[in-house]
Amino acid sequence: MRSAGGSRYTTTRYLTEAYPPERRGWAIGIWMGVGALSGALGPFVGGALVEGIGWHWIFWINVPIGVALIPIALARVGESRGGHPRLDLVGVALATAGLFGITWGIVHTDVAAWTSAGVLAPIAAGLATMGAFAAWERRVAQPMLPLSMFGDVGFSAANGISFALYAGLFGALFLMSQFFQTAQGASPLRAGAELLAWSATGIFVAPQAGRLADRFGNRPFILGGLAMQTIGLGGVALLADPEAPFLALAPLLVVAGSGTALAFTTVANEVMASVPPERTGIASGINSALRELGGVFGVAVLASVFAHAGGYSTAAEFVAGFRPALWVAVAFSACGLGPALLLRRGLGPDGEDGATTSDPVTEGTSP
Image 1: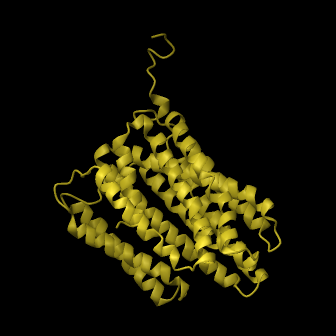
Image 2 (image 1 turned 30 degrees about the vertical axis):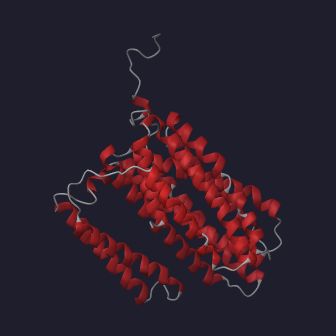
Image 3 (image 1 turned 180 degrees about the vertical axis):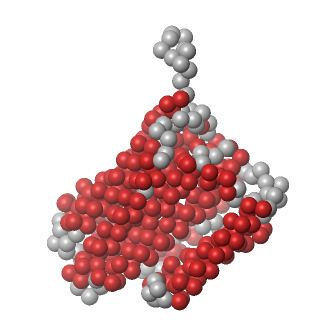
């Protein structure tokens, strides 16, 4: 079965192919809303399983779901093929090895310092391999990743935003559930229920964001979403305390969650709108890879900051590490604002700058 990242890659491309450009944002918004629903239920159901049966069942419960979806996919999902006549096997090998080395180094920061050879060596090897991958892609006739795609400001900026957005989101989410349990003494089920204030907002926000982005463009929603995630997480960092009432934290979680839904939906729409139709699969795959890498990086950095300043012995010690770590997540979220300012101000139905889509001769006249 495909990984979660692979599933996001294929479903985004299918949406792009199934709907015209003027309805792409709406379709991606609905897709994001369904994803938000599963994300909202995940911590709650996971908490119930951990508390009622055992933590091993958070893995087993996915097996029957995956098995049940296979015949549905076979029956209802059509085949989709790219435009390349042959597979760039060398490019695939180099990209896989490079990303593996970078990820391996990052995830090992839980047992080794960032400056240790066990972390720096694989990251350096991964970066060098990615350099070799870029050099190969420039010279091969049918590249897996045409580097010219990054010449589009919208495409490059949107992918940079995805990395920053997910670094802040995954890093904060990793520690937030532990905050409710370790610092505030909540059960796994209660912690999952309290996280609904953060994740469930996407069910309502994402579809509307996608629909409105089709009319007003992606830029204002990306900027607003990043600002809301930054403000919401910053507020939680200020109020984080073992005695902080949930009713004081909940509005901030709602703000952060709504911002995440706004930004994620419209960033995906921006990525798809920045490339020609025959390259949507490649664009979706790149965006998925950078999101996953950003999430891994965010969790590793926040965990390192937490471990340096705090621990799990007492509630006070946990909060001592949680606060500075959450400020790092705030910084990650704010880092996405710079690239967002580079985006076009609006996108019309044809994917062009909304400021230039009207006809100066016929504008304002009756049909």
